[in-house]
View 1: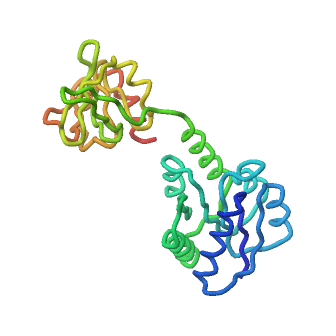
View 2: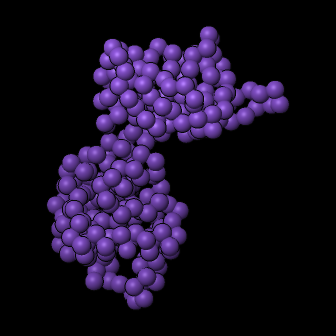
View 3: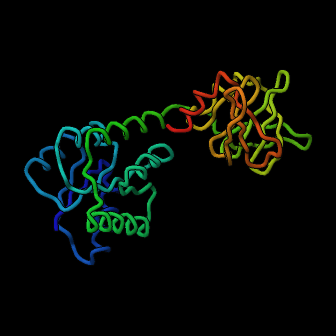
Length: 254
């Protein structure tokens, strides 16, 4: 067995190598590259059983390396990037370790690689998947609202965006409903709030309401090309407008 480690940070490389040797209970032959240029040279002249790769190398993204060099070697990515990129990796069945990772995290990633490979379910990284991962990385770097500051009579409370299922306009401010059905006043209008929310997570279903994809429990057809939506924590159903229904259907399927 021989592996390739693509990691620009020396402490991270040393940590990965120690995890490899501990897992296999032996010193595994390996090559180490800190840049795309070094990695390309090694991949051109060597064969590896699997690759441990960070995403950000000294001279660019490892995605670009795998786009330039055609390989069938299984890759386990090791990176601090999470959220959208993490979801993209899981969707494509790629083993991924999120920094700061532990020996247990590493063990699970190796076992995932071995399971996929032995069952013949491992799919080599192709240009389409690389493009999707790069798009997710770019999306992750876009700044969207993560929490709102809510003023209460007893002081200030932080409301995480991930807890919000619906936001409804109410004059110059809005009412946000959380997963438990509790309502919170946000001192901004609906348009301003909508522009701060991630478009894949929230949708403006009509002129006065925004809902979260994570809060949708049920959807049923209604008259005049409208949809009735049951939302977590909310007794009354909400409704799309006739003009937003088509876009809402496409949003659900993305």
